[in-house]
Structure formats: structure tokens, C-alpha cells
Image: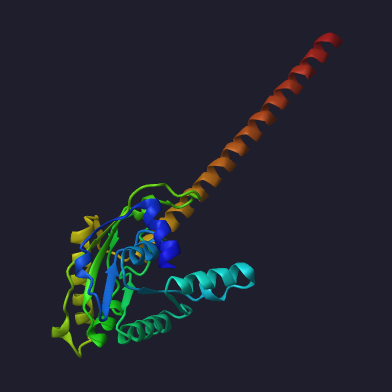
Length: 266
């Protein structure tokens, strides 16, 4: 996949990279990145010599038919692991277990602390628990990563990607060994997550929003729904007004015809 997809991405989009020296040549490490685009999980591994494993929703690996099999083969090829997201807690534990297995093999594990893609290019609050517990249980260093402009390559609704150079900034590893054995403390989880998010913020230069991206997406969806309902109501109101106007015009025409018949009869 590095020779095919990876080289194709590098040749086509020519991503620029800063801080490659911060990724160790060997040993486990957690790459914690902001999440702007579906392509983040491809651009980051493409510029590294080492394999990076991410987690992906199980549906990518279980879809039926030829297309489903090809999709599953592709995601396996780029090093992604399936995680069943049918239960919030179950999904979190499955993600941590998968991450620990990768780190125990001495490999790189990629994670998005925001939990989902940014809906508007801003950096959202990191979700506590997953990243922090993984870092504290494994003892692996956390390397902050900032993806730059990847959301501009293929914005929502666009089929053909825009040819432009995305960027990747890799920060210095963060050591959380001082919190070892405290992975179940929610205040420690919050502290670790916030420290990582601040490092990503400094690298990315994004505007920070102190709320979860999932909540922002709900707000955007609700606002779009309200706008659509208002537009529908406005259209219905205009249609009703046009109907009433036509009825009035018809009545006026009929009244005029009746008046003309009365004059002729007289």
C-alpha cells in the first residue's frame, strides 16, 4: 500500500512535512492528530517510513458483495483495524484493546482525540478516556500531529479532489509517565487529553472550540433541519398565496362576465 497508494498520494499532492525527526525509528508511539478529512489516515502513513495503524468502523470490513470485499481489502491493506461502534462504552474498550495490541508489538498507533472529523475546520475539544487511558496503560509516548488543509482537497459534496499541497506538522513526543497507574482517574484523563490538544493547537494554528465535535455536528444538523423546514413552510405559504390570488382573479373575471351579460340583457 505504501508503494501504490502512498506513492500515488505523494506524487499527486506533494504533501509537505515538518518534524519527521520526532517519530522514533523503532518502538511504540501514539500519533495523536487533529481530524479534518477522510484522507488524514492515508496522508500521514504515506509520509512515514514506518507502518501506522488506525481504527475504523467495522462496517468498512463487513459490507456484502464485491464492493464490500474490495473495501475491506483496502482498509486492511492501509493498516486499519475494525472496531464495532454499536455501543459507546464497548466501542471505547475495543479501541483501547486494539491500540494496546498494536503498541505491544512495538508499532505506531494513530488516533484522533476529537473522536470525529471537524465539521468546519476548527479544532474541537478532545474526548477524555481513549487517548489518555491508552497512553497511561501502554507507557508509550504521545506524538502530537497537525494535518493542514486536508479538508480543502475534497470538501463535502465534491467528487473530484482539488490538486493542492496539504501539510503535516509533527511535534515533539509528550511523556505522561508521571501519571502511570492513574488511567482510571477522570481528572487525569482530562489533563492528559487537554495537554495533547494544546500541543496540536500550537502546531495547527486552528481556531479552538471548547465543545465536542459531535455536539457541533448535531447543532449544525439541527440548524440545517430548521432552515429546511422554514424554507418548506415559506414555499407552502407562497403557494397558498398564489392559489388565493388566482382564485380572486378568477372570481373577478367571472363577476366581470356576469356584469357584461347583465348590461347586454338590459
